[in-house]
Image 1: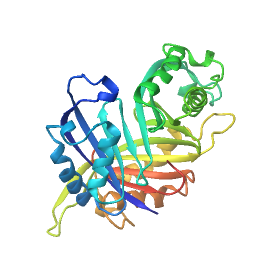
Image 2: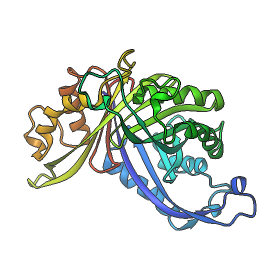
Image 3: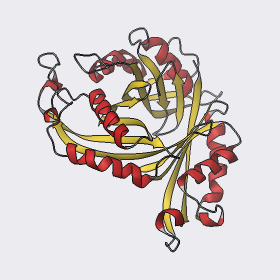
Image 4: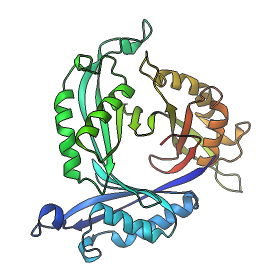
Amino acid sequence: MPTTHLATSGFEAARRLGQVDGPTSRPHGHSFFVTAESATLDLAALRQRLGEVCAPLDYRDLNSLLPEPDDLALATGIADRLRSPVRLTLRSAPERGIELEADGRAQRWLSTGFEAAHQLPNVAPGHQCGRLHGHGFGVRLVADAGACTDAELAAAWQPLFGQLQHRYLNDLPGLANPTSEVLSDWLWHRLADTLPAIRAVEVFETATAGSRRDADGYTIWKEQRFEAARPFDAEGRYTGHSYLVRLYLAGSPDANSGWLRDFAEVKALFAPLYRQLDHHALDTLPGIAAHDCAGIAEWIATQLRPELPELAQIDLFENEHEGARLRLGAAR
């Protein structure tokens, strides 16, 4: 079960993007946020190294360091200076950034969303999703960074936003059963017609659950949180974290329900583990080999996968963004 570690850093800097804003554009500033994922460095080492690489960028004029300091150039430069194979995500604004794979493939992403109502007609009687209700849906679009610009990605989204915003989704052709999986597939096919560079569409039904559609198929995720203590040092001291666990499932939606799995069912299957983790000391758990994020993720996988064979990946973070990623199968 391959495990990677994720660490974050950030910096404040100014830049001028001549190719985007015109050669006479004024310098402007950003709060840049960087996440690095490594299979060779543990969390502490990766956090330290990433901080060292980002520190020289803090409060700098980036044009003095790079000829054209756009997001892709910045992400590539940071990855090169880490001197270790990494997967890097650079966020230059809350709604956009770059994903740089360890093999050099780059994708740009745009976070957006819409507000709409729906109901799911094929659920069991009494299920809450069968009632008319609504969401502030989040949407994240991922595209080949070399084949489209931020502006082209945003422009491709606008007609779809116009169709979805403040609508009853069930009335739209193709959305008679608008689960997250069906909606992500609906967006995927419509964007593919207008934006060949599209690589993935993610739909966040809530802040803790969503669905991804890409060329390989479907992935859904469900987040849970728990509070726990863990051993800190050899002297017997403890520390604690507010942990975030994200469970990814890969597969194909059921033709009738439109679900890969009901998010409520995933939550219910995790509930026995939650009761063992929440407000406990992790070294009291039977069968746990290590008390870091990687060890907790492996313990969860061992306990949960017999009940949830679609489980393909587990993210276990000790804060909002840093921890371990355990890949079990085809989750992306």
